[in-house]
Image (cartoon, rainbow, N blue to C red; front, side, top):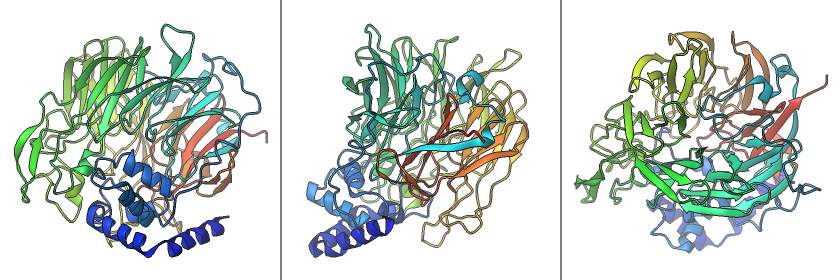
Length: 612
């Protein structure tokens, strides 16, 4: 089947009209190559190699309704199609079989299990974003982990990235995909209950909760066009949809969090990509948290991470008007502090000068009003756009920063002595502990990596009352213009004592050997159960380590073909973005991340304990 797909793609490419190929190549060279071909591997945009494994539909959707809509706004529909055909070498598909195959034989009218039973709800499993699953919820002990076996695989059609984490509640599993759909599956078998079409891809985790004032259970989530949704959990019927930010580059990448009838939605953007074009008036986006009534989707308040509105600051070398301050997007799920009636968020870098005092920072807002309570900046003067690593650096800010933003959620922990701390790891390679009860005062800082635009700690850490477990990316690329991963750099897993900040457990990077498209980098979020740490690698391996000493307990190579329960061609690959989700004795992981030259893939894998 893989050979057939390759041959079919070659025929489509070779037999396409010469004019379309020429137009696509010319359009790409004029409008896309600066970012996708001009970097040294450190920017946040995928190179040509990564896009060649994507489907035509995915790339076209990205250009028309997805994350690249702001950059492609001047292109016609025909031009967008020509670009998509050129970069993928493919044509439009005739439709997905995912909705037709793998349907559950029985459609229940209720959750198959108790909704207060074993579950993983949202990004961080709790309001503290600890990513620690207690024993009664995990249903999995350390001595069972070595007997984990694959139970089923579910594939997303036409995808090269599997980037949305699953949520498991009441025996159902909810997950978004690059196919611009949310899928509801049976958590035990993987059969499909329903799918719901969205305006754009859904990368954020989904939250399940009763809809206030009704007898419905709803799922709440956001998409990459900055829309927040409430959908009936059992039927897939839309309840409400609210666009939380009108800026063309806005998107929702962090999971919205529900608390006391209010949905708190973090807003990020890709303006640092759009802002790299010399003709773009960089930059006007500001990150924010938007509070919505969970019952209706009606806005309650919006708190911007940069209080000051962007204003004209000067013109670039080509005469384009520039604006600032800008940036400070929120990439991750907010953290709720019930005791202090506060919400904590981690922000990205600034996009333009003047750099903001609230970028690369942890911010605390009042839950009821959105008032800023305190801020703690980790890296000052980090103004950066993708142009800083491109051939045309026209819009790169003078004295630009290192792009050391926060990509993960702060974790609120109560230590055994009652002391409370907020702990979070940064792309700089530094882990920070702050005092939430003393205005965010720094308690300790510990370095675990070198850092960089794709370095340090990326998507998420995990913590119990004693330690935080942090994965190090430090992914690097060969500096030969090929965008190939450097198989000799990156990686490492660390356990840090929360009271002192000292490293008390360390797992060294696992070498790639002769494995192709490999990096030992650990970019994916970490997951913790009692006595065991799970960490996914860019190499494609999901591994489980003993939490006390880092001993390897189990590993599974996901970079291979699978037979999917929904009849879609399935292949695993690099593990990046979301980490493992564990509930009711099962372990779920995404596999496939072709974004940064890693092995592309399109699957969600489910494991259970074998009987042997």
